[in-house]
Amino acid sequence: MDEPKFSIFLTSLGMQAMIFLGEMPNPVNNETKVELSRAKYMIDTIAMIKEKTQGNLSAEEQKLIDDILCGISLKYAEKNK
Image (cartoon, rainbow, N blue to C red; front, side, top):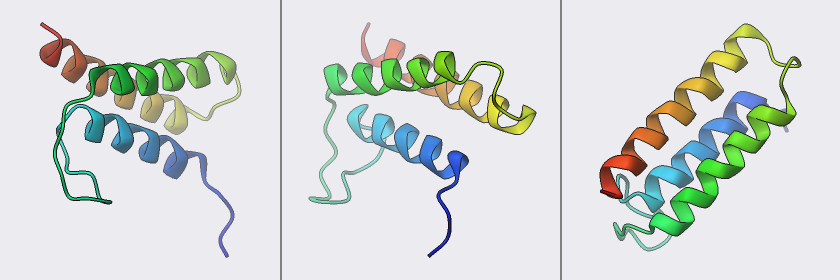
């Protein structure tokens, strides 16, 4: 098996947030459903990871976490108006 990669981990968290925002169907049941409280939890989790890894990320990893957090936060704000 391959070693875990931080970028894949972050991307999977971002995808979970997109599922909870109703932007992607849930792969388990193929349903698209907006669950804002669960999306907010994922956003907060990614923000916590960003804070806890501050100064320990490569430039590429930092850009990835910033891009994911920005994208899902904007979608959350759109859905939560």
